[in-house]
Image 1 (cartoon, one colour):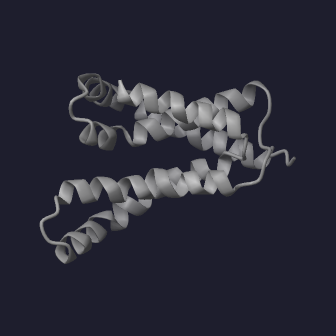
Image 2 (cartoon, rainbow, N blue to C red; image 1 turned 30 degrees about the vertical axis):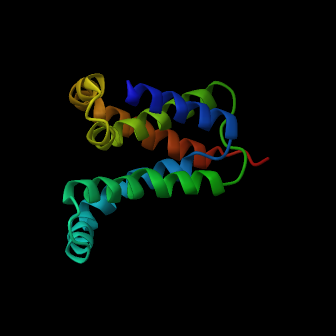
Length: 149
């Protein structure tokens, strides 16, 4: 249930704020790559310097910072405009689904009481690649066809 609420909240944010989504979308995908390269080392560094802290929790927080935190800051600081009409709705939906998908494991970790989140997380792995491709295509489309307001 919490993943569905997150999905709806992200979609509403992207539709109401109406900023350029493309750069933030690519930032989220880049955040996954950065976490894969440096996330484990950063988690080890933090857990070695802070005593009595759960390494899984620190790893989840570091992942959320790279994949959701920085891209959302990029989104909120980007210029107004971007795609318009039905393309805007589709791009907002793709970005919301992509962020919710990429962060579903961490959301399920922090909300372990939500069985529906656990089920969604395990079932969504089948379409993860296609959603990533859709996100990349819509990000490039947004950057190329960007309309500044």
